[in-house]
Length: 76
Image (tube, rainbow, N blue to C red; front, side, top):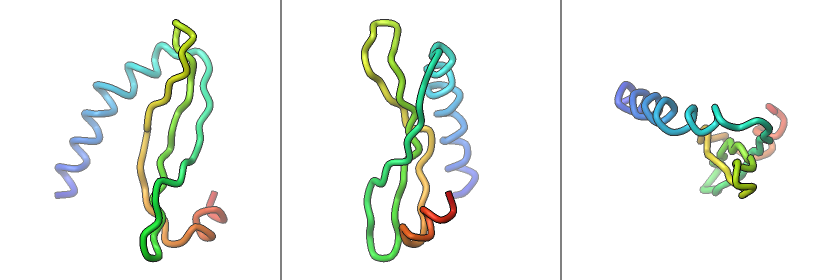
């Protein structure tokens, strides 16, 4: 299962994320809290940018879990 997940993530990065970001001149990144369930928090690493039509855009680079927000904040 881990190999399948790794391949999906790899293909998504190569086909969607990297081509999109290759055209971007300036961007910012944010760490967004998506949800908390039990003692786990799910975060998304998001790149925010403005495209060549001056439209605000974003793309999710990664999603990951932390065991408790306070630990996640301290780790960053």
